[in-house]
Structure formats: C-alpha cells, structure tokens
Length: 360
Image 1 (cartoon, helix red, strand yellow):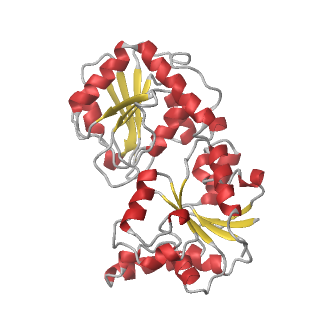
Image 2: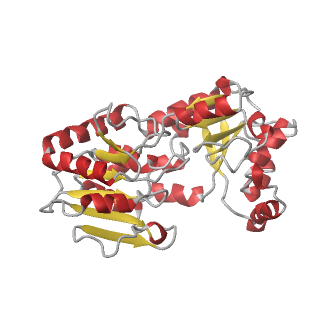
Image 3: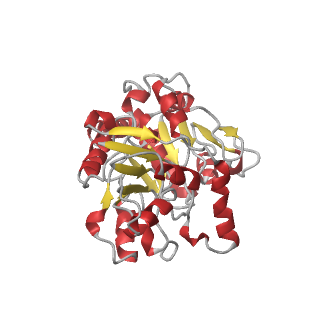
C-alpha cells in the first residue's frame, strides 16, 4: 500500500531530525513506522509554491474563510504527484480542496485527515465531511461532538485513535529522583498554546519547590516580579525556548509535570501529557473535556479547575508532601505509555484504518 502524507509543517525536516535522534516519532503521526505495517509512505514537501498559500487571505477578505482552507500549495501538488492508494493529512485544515474534489468524484484517491480539535458547527461545509473517507479523532469527546453537531455523519467514518509517544526517543525509564541533582523538587511546565502559567506561578509561590517554565515570549506569565522559586525560559513569539532533546532532559530532572491551561475549545495539553507519560512523572493538569486520559482515575495525577490557584497549590502540596505517592503515579504513567499510549500502537491502529479502505 502506498500513501502520500502531508501536514501543516515541514515533515521532511522533522523526519530527518527524527532519524538523527533529535525529534520524537509521534510528531510524525505514524510516518516513521508505517513501513513496519506494510504501508509505504511518501512525505510531500511542505512548500514548493508558497504563493499559493496566500489564497486563503483572499478568502478571508471575501468572507469565504468559513471553509478553513489551508495548504493549497501541498494539495495542488498532491493532485499531480502520482498514483497513491491513499492521501493522508495529519492536519484537519490541510485537506479541504482534496475532500471537495473527492466528494465531486474528480479525485478517486481516498482521503483521510486527523481531527485534532472540535469543529464549530457551521464553520465548514458538508462537503468537508462527505469528501473525507475517514476522519481520525484523537479525542472521543471531539468525535462525539462531530457526530452530534453533524448528524448526517456515518459513525463508522469517524474513528477515535489513541495518540502515543515515541518511547525510544526518551530513553530508558528512570524513576523520579534517580537523575535529580537539585536539593528541592522541580516542577516543570512546558508549553505555549492555551497556557495559564500565572495560575501555576501563584500556586507555587512560597512552596518548597522550584518551578521551571518553558514557553514562548507571548505566553509567558504576567507576574512581575516572579517569585524566587520560579525560573522562566522563553523563546521568541510563538517559538519554543529549547530543542525537544533539551526538553526531555529537563523532564527527566522533574519531580512532577504541570500542565496549566486556559479555558479553550481545543485539545490543549495533550503533547505535554504524552511527554509526562514517556518520562514517567506524575501530572497536575487543568481539566480539559477533550482530554480522554483521566489522570485521576488512572492514578497518574491530579486534576485542577480552570484558574483555580488554590486548587493548584493544594495539588502541588499533596505531591510534595507525599513523594511515595508521586513516585507511584510516575510508575503508572510510564506503564500506560508502555501498554497503550505509544507510537507503535498508534501506527498499528492507523495502518489498520488505511488497509480497511478499498484501493484507489
């Protein structure tokens, strides 16, 4: 089976970084391991005619942007790239043209897209759904929302898969404390999308721990000055402050991982949660209805309500005062990665979806 793969960022560079051990395979959305399941994957270069991508700005100007069309450069090239059994987009906004042509019967190749976030009712036309052969959701809540808001959808066409980490990238599991040289427990919060770092800063003020925040300049906490036990590392606007390899080493020094998020209609925090599972650290996280992994029910962490600094402080204090409980949470987190939330399992499930479709 031969698949053409596209995404909303440069997958060829990411694949090269993965080959050099600088980037985890789960951010390749199966492309690194599909060959192990009998699927030959070709990655379409991200940009060749970038001017084509400015077309969406014209749509917005004409108030036609409800279609959410992006990535025209890639999609147009996909049409003339050659024969493939399937076109796979890891971004829900980069396959609309292909889906439309598929719905009209012009494109014979099946099209599959990953749906990361909820789709607001009325924000896309029906042809978006009818033109995709399968929609892969990373959240059952997102899947159920689609089936409720778009009643014409066939439930068998909308599939939920569990995303999972590239455990090999993170190295052998070592329990919290094994690699820690700091005299006080370290709480790590890394992320720049939909983050509420201030709630963590306020909660940790005065506690016997060090909080290390890694974020972009535009997502940094507003508190000024920061408490003495908070260390901030920022990148440029919307940019990461460290390489993924550097961040993994930071996580390995952590006592626990914090994921404070704002109220949002998005699957925010999932990447950081995957990182926590991979390194085997307990998690304190703001509730997000689109996160399927119940960290409390599974015994790997503590939920906090949105903007609840008191709740965050109580959660931090609980783990700091009960290191044995925190260590047990970390062990369970890594076990979940071993047994379920890993890139090999995700890719196996993805390949099964691919091969279930009729060949083009």
